[in-house]
Amino acid sequence: MKDISNETITAYIGLGSNLEDPIAQINSARLAINQIENVKELTFSSLYHSLPMGPQDQPDYTNAVMGVITTLEPLDLLRSLQTIENAQGRVRKGERWGARTLDLDILLYGDEVLDHPDLKVPHIGLTQRSFVLYPLQEIAPDLLIPGKAALADLVALCPLDGLKRLD
Ligand code: ROI
Image (cartoon, rainbow, N blue to C red; front, top):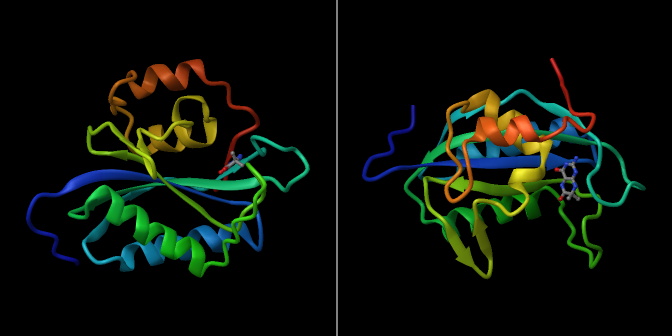
């Protein structure tokens, strides 16, 4: 078991993929996140099958949400996640909301509200995205989303949009 001392923050990370064996991409990202120094997995949701939000001419997605404890500052956590995205073949094309091998988003960082050019927390799309809200509810049903609402209330307002839990 990893020993993480000092002050820890609980953060939630959204994982998404719709290229090159998405389930394998999510599983190897989970392993890689566990290899980040000063990050330790607390919880991991089921995998979910979701329809693409954004352009429809792309494959369906696999999504999940992971809870971690960490002593990393938010931007250091972000950089570590970007390194994993790049290592798993993520190519950033100009196209907005296009297909991707791996997307790792910091959804929540403790109860902090951050407005940095590189990082907005809570994640901007969180309140409207079924593929984020439902997996998050599975692992942290009592969460309060800072500056927004209770997670349960956001879930109640968010249609499934074809989201399916994989077993
Ligand atoms: N759509 C789904 N279903 N899942 C995602 O993870 C996802 N990620 C994105 C966009 C392109 C907005 N659409 C998505 O970044």
